[in-house]
Each structure stands twice: as C-alpha cells, then as structure tokens.
Image (cartoon, rainbow, N blue to C red; front, side, top):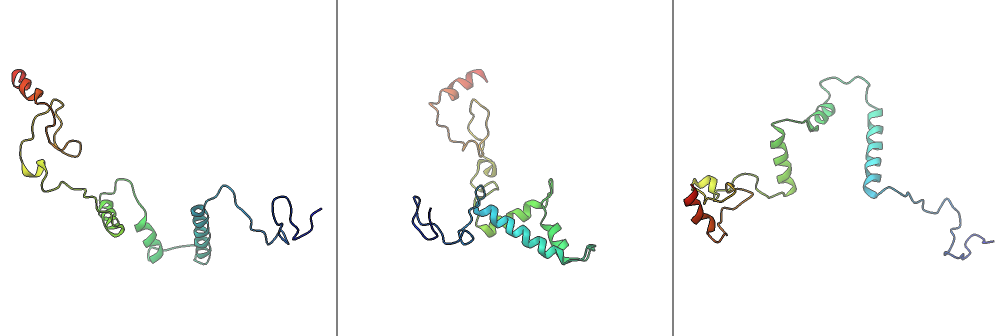
Length: 136
C-alpha cells in the first residue's frame, strides 16, 4: 500500500532499500574495528611470499611483540609501556616504608607485617599490647 517516499506508520520509508543503512545487530564498534583491522592485515599478508626467512623485519617485530608466559624480561617492557601510557602507581617499596627504614613494626594479634595490606598504624584500644606481654 505504501509507495516509496510515503509516510508509513513507523516513519518515512526510504526510496530504495539499498540506500537504507544496514544495521549489524550483536556487534559493537570495537568488534567492527578489529574485524576491519584483521581484514587489512590479511590483505597485506596476501602479497608477501609464502616462505619467510629469519631476516624478515616484520616477522621479527611480530615475534618480539608477542607476550610469553614466564618471561622475566617482559616486566621491563611492561614498565616502559606503562610509563608511555601515563600509569603512575609505584610498584616498588617506597622510601618511607617500614621495610625500607628498618624500624620494628608494632605487634598485632594477626602477625601481619606492614606493607600493602597494613600501614603499620596501631588503631586498636591497646588491649592487645597489654595482654600480649602476659602471654609472650
């Protein structure tokens, strides 16, 4: 009943269905970009020779970028990458730490040393310090 360009119940129908924007349901923008990048990579690989030697610079670059489990030098590469991205959270022990200063931490009932789980500040009501001298 409706002709092209005529107003229907849901709105204006397009003149031709080919010009209507096709919606891909179930895929996001990131997935579409990844698929396009993979397709471009395959197009580039298609022109390369089948046999690749050790001297191929692109192959060497790809193998260097590959992450391997248990690689002790990968930490250095990750640290450089974190610095480039602006990741500023320190991963080493700070100079004002109990561990660096060599000061004996106050005793607690759980036996936890100061560090990332406990800052070494006694926030109790001093019940443990008075009773620990009796038991120890």
